[in-house]
Amino acid sequence: MEMSQIRYVLAAAKHLNFTKAAAECNVSQPALTKGVKALEGELGSPVFHREGRRILLSDFGRTMLPHLQHIVDEAAAAQTLAQNFRLLEQVPIRLGIMSTVGHIRLARFLAQFEKNNGGLELGVSEAPIGELKDKLRNGEIDVAIMTLTDDLEAEYRTHHLYSERYVVVFPPEHRLGSSNAISLKDLSGENYVDRLACEMREMVMGVCESMNVELYARFRSEREDWVQAMVLAGIGFAFMPEYSVTLPGLLQRPLIEPTVERSVVAVTVPGRKFSPAVDALMRSTQSFAWPG
Image (cartoon, rainbow, N blue to C red):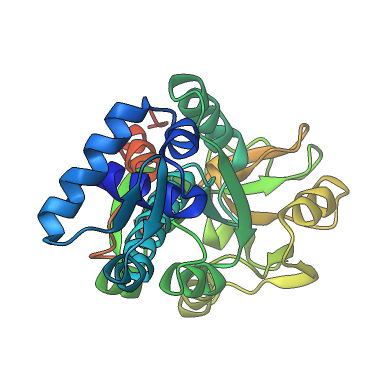
């Protein structure tokens, strides 16, 4: 039983005329008649009574017609589902980026990815690490760019991108600006700008406490642009990842004793199959010349 034969029968039942049915199906009348006879032979009974040029549905034909129509409807539904699936492949890649990750180097990567993969669309959203983890888990984003942590590595699949040091950021006139590197003890008693969104903030504060380093937070913010602007305005210094410093005019010096470093990773959900677009993105993250 072929789908074309079923369509021939339905068209003939609609018009009760083989010539008109052939025109609707865009085939010759002999071809349509042959297809109808073939289907009747396969079903074992005539679907139509033929009276010269006139045709009528047989009792058997009336019984079979709803079932044949159902087959055509199901085939059309399957084609619609397949088409929708293909369209889903064109939905933008949903990329989440942790708010403390520097955007300049990521922008260079994304620009190269777009150049090498014309036609793919990319949607980027920024959020704190906890929100990104929830969005990944709930399927609201496909990939997240975050700082590697122990719990992240245990729950998700991580792909290393690059590592970066933490630096101390000063306004140009700061007294420590002439130093080549800064230890935590050098900063004791200094005013500082507190980056509340920093995922390593508690660790750094804990080290300061263990080393009896006293810091005085004169400004606190979750926004990286505000933190850098207030440092440049002379409010105090800030601890920042080296590739997140973007405001011209700021001085940055390596933090030593202790050295603090973070690993930036692309994060996906284990066992969740990549779409072709997401697969292309992940392969590009591994071939791109990241800093360091």
